[in-house]
Amino acid sequence: MTDFEAQRKRMVADHIRGRGISDELVLSAMEKVCREAFVAAQFSFLAYEDGPLPIGEGQTISQPYVVAFMIEALALKGGERVLEIGAGSGYAAAVLAQIAGEVYAVERIGPLAHKAASNLDGQGYRNVHVHLADGTRGWEDAEPFDAILVSAGAPAMPDMLKRQLAPGGRLVVPVGDSRQDQELIRVTRLADGRFEQKKLADVRFVPLIGEEGWPGPSAVTTPT
Image 1 (cartoon, rainbow, N blue to C red):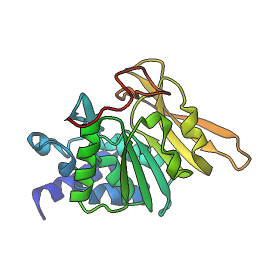
Image 2 (cartoon, rainbow, N blue to C red):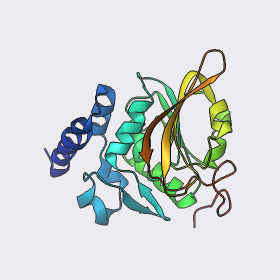
Image 3 (cartoon, rainbow, N blue to C red):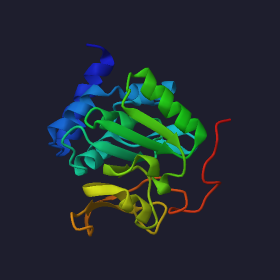
Image 4 (tube, helix red, strand yellow):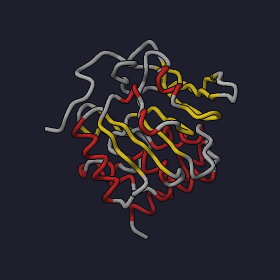
């Protein structure tokens, strides 16, 4: 067992299971994904601390507990078609890929999209597809999705993402009228086309920028 493997097991025991995450699929996935491969080398010694870390371009990799909490809220059973908005360095997509059949990850910042694709490929994830685009528009060519995870805070519920849910599908997204603080909301698309909404927790994410998000630089930035 390497030191990282030992740290990963402790993280899951203390910060994930120990804080109430009980979904065995999520716990197993968190124990398998090498978080050190998704953070900058200078921060690898902090990879299994339960906190966010900078990944460049003014963005962060979310703390492990929050990733686990959000994925548990998606109620995955295995084999689903999942969309992630805000791929960052690819960590949450890797966790999702341990459970889902196919993961479609959208990132609006070119260097991060490239980094996520490289990290995921380097770790052997062949069921994750990374797309450089405005995440608030989802991924229309790949819809519908059984689950959608949004890893950035929206000023309001993104209607386009709701419409890309399959019947019975779940959308988990931070929503708030402040760029700093949000409520984590789960939206479920019912069989009759209506949507059911539930508040899960108070959270803090970087802002979701795009057509149905906060205003910011051009919707998609390309690699430099």
